[in-house]
Amino acid sequence: MRITRVLGAALLALGLAAGPAAADSSPSPAASDDGKAPTRAGTSFRTATEIEQGQRATASGSTGDYLYWSFPADTGQRPTVRATVKLPGTHGSEAWQLDVYDGLRRRQACQYGAQTRTAAQGTGSVELACVLRTVRGWSEPWADDPLPGTYYVRLTVVDLGASDLGQPVSAEVRVDSKDIGGAAAVDGSLGKPLVPGIAVKAGEDRDGSKAAVLSSFGSDDGWSSGWWSDRWVWTAIGGMLAALAGIGGYVLTRGPGRPSRVPPNA
Image (cartoon, rainbow, N blue to C red):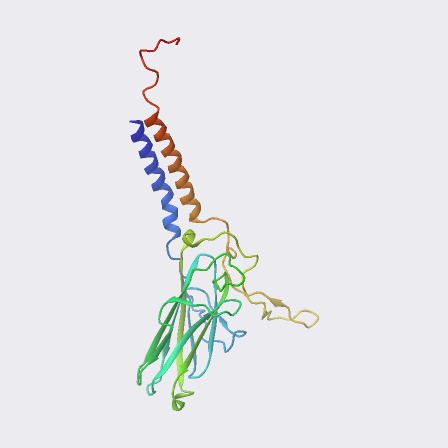
């Protein structure tokens, strides 16, 4: 009977504690597109257009242009960048490429996705995708692991005929993230996120100089906010199961108690 009660309490604790963990591993909610989505792209890292995750950005350009956007990504997120390029009615075969760089302008590898695709002659559009690795809270200085901060998206054509250079195209970019949570958590954290300090305030100071500021976007409650992770849930579950296993082992091995044939004063 005691063993049954012990196992029942363990299963109940497991079910209650697993609830928050399952919620933490769900995809992060997408930002609403309230009609303020950008309609143009930058032409370099310094002029990259800022977009939020879940926001659809569009831009018009010409084949041969470099189109740049930037977005924030925080610890525990696995960003997915998707781009669609609408091509003119008449064109030859051309290859388009989607590249993602971190705040230090290091090119980030894609876990999977069609990062480079070739549009055959007469194709109306081409779709590209890049699923990044999970953003880590800390990394060795020599590593190129994705870290919290600003990420840059660069879209351009890498192979086309000379007759197609300069033809008008339109592009659409969207970034979404899945919250991986404690499954990818590591010990340690950055002192500051990798965000650029090149943005300039719209208004000038009284002395006429412009003050540099950090990127204007980020998490609503701060970068890498809080210390909570679903790793704490599973650590607590493991500790509770270990304690219950110890109690169960004691109950099974302690025996019926003092033998009845032994005198009370022995």
